[in-house]
Image (spheres, rainbow, N blue to C red):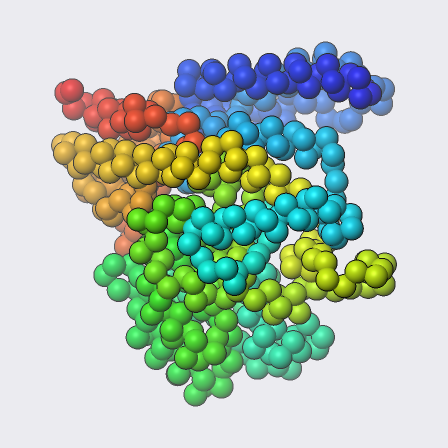
Length: 464
Ligand SMILES: *Cc1c(COP(=O)(O)O)cnc(C)c1O
């Protein structure tokens, strides 16, 4: 296959993509595949001789779409959608074609400078102060790991990186129990240890109890621990918990702790001024992450980390061996010094295309619709016999239960997903098995959303 063949097959792929997207509502959202089924259809070893693209493409069509959970399905209400607006898909194709590597300014000037401008566009769109800069990572998990590594090194006066942690004080990181497992993963990878991630109790609103936070930090100091940082959440994954960011950061500041806000899914909603009270005080954070691939339509993967001052993170992660020096240019930004990997994809392009093709107003309209429709679906489900709302809508996320029973709720969820018209997933809240409904798919309509109460009514035998 050469570049002329690529041109031919790219057009075939574009036709396929259009037909695929047009067919989604007719497909079950979740794959109906058993483990091992697909592997058994592939030869056990790689071919010795080249195969024709016709055969490869035909196998793709016969094997892959039917064994795929369709994340772009407009009735995907599970987890949080990973969106891919058409404009962002186009940008990804162009980034693919260039296939550059944006580790240094010099290796990708356009990618580097568009990245800086996109961070500024988003910062302003979300109402954050002009002091923030930032960078683009693959995932919120990576951004949170960078923040936790920075907490560690800042608290240890940058000795951890050189000496290792063995002889240094035991660090502590603080977060609420509503924060995502990516925070647990980050403290493990950072060598801080799960036991030193303190899950601070929450109050009735599911926000971190800031008085408890303060008391635990004081007690830890007296006990000889070294507090290093506080992680707050704006929109927890389980039920959409919102910490009171302002008061939480005040406690962090009073103890001179580095702070990070995980706003992975809910952060996108901050382009709508009316939702900003949900993270009141975020302007005081040291680091904030949100995923444009979740609710802004930028194709997975795309996680934005805002930094009030990039210096501590660069001091933690930046290495500049002679072979990575750009001779004669000291004022440029080399984003690999802000992130874990050296090599970096050109992710800013899809933000540029997406923000321009839909405009902030187009994106706000989608988010506002999703929030409104989630509210309407919630009201319908609350009225269905046997159903009880367990947590009310947090933006576009709420949870409910059936027949006040773990078993009945779990059994219903299985029937919902076997049915295939909609896709929902579960969480455990205050010890109980509950079903989550999260509206956020880029192309969903009110009709798609309202199919959820309709399917629930049908599957539980309720009359229309
Ligand atoms: C989705 C999510 C994450 C993880 O995001 P990745 O980009 O997949 O690492 C972390 N925190 C919250 C609140 C999330 O919703």
